[in-house]
Image (cartoon, rainbow, N blue to C red):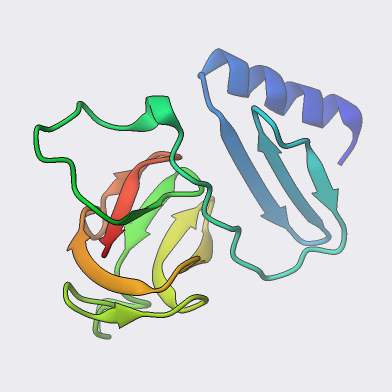
Length: 146
């Protein structure tokens, strides 16, 4: 991947107001994020789930009178949310389950790549916000932990 291709991707991100882009192909692992982090290009591609970014102050939905207590696990990328590895298998987690740091919570499919999303903190699942098979945006709340 050359600089012209990366510049074109950045232009498309600006045009479509995207804050995060992740491309993983044979020999290339490209992550672009607007804000504090810089562009990362790694070769060869490694199979690893990106870390979930903390929710930005402006990314929260309209404030509800009873804001939920606890941690929110947000989508680290744009893609399709899946609660299980296949339709025939049970969901990775359910409401009431206790999760530990590093445990797989769900999968987000982005550009035909299945990305396992892992817990960054331990806690008890109080809500599963994302709907199975539905698209999610960068920063959308996937789960709430207590």
